[in-house]
Length: 306
Image 1: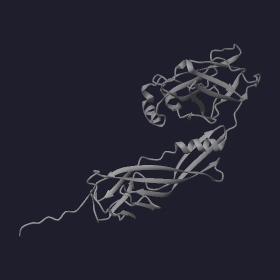
Image 2: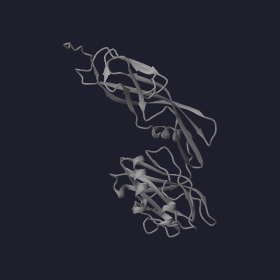
Image 3: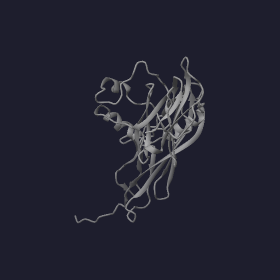
């Protein structure tokens, strides 16, 4: 548990900067409010409200949760509080704490879904005595004593940095390489295609510090390696059987010695981003690779008696 005070009655909002771990305010507040006995929080209608994200910086020294001041209430002070050792308090200020989230039965479905987006991390709650509430995801191996909360002036959001972080997190689906026939035959064309993706653009979005950044990636090229030295470049992921796929390859030797050939497809995605629905701007391309094993056999002539 850690504490940081700040002076006056301050309305605060979390602003994201370039970070190692970032978590959106995706906690289902309606669930928590409707089922207070099973959840951990019931919103106070008089508490400050926030529309931004919590920012977490995880490094070798521990975890820092950043909170930025964007407004002060009448009679409050806009001066930034001093940063102490995480255990400071002030009789005229507001204190915040961070603790491992106590997940009730009503949040198990949410926890299972969100955990897939934050591997290796657990949800923590951030609560301030003025009513502010938020959720962050912190690595499992972090000691609570190494978590601190830092409060300060608003930090300008760099849209390009946000776009680059989103680009690393774009939800590219798991893909399988399928083929017809299931067992390849020497000198007979095999048809290949990608299962789990139809080539449509993939998007991700993040709203931070008053701006919304959208990122979109689109497949530009599919580079196929069929495992025996043969390669092919296509503009499509192929068509599933019984349609005739435009990704075809004929093996000239069997995979008897290796057991199977390793077929690889590397997808090159063009990427772009926009801010608050404005014009699209280009980002560097990204690639993703997927592999599968494909056995190939030699047809053998068999003599039979009439």
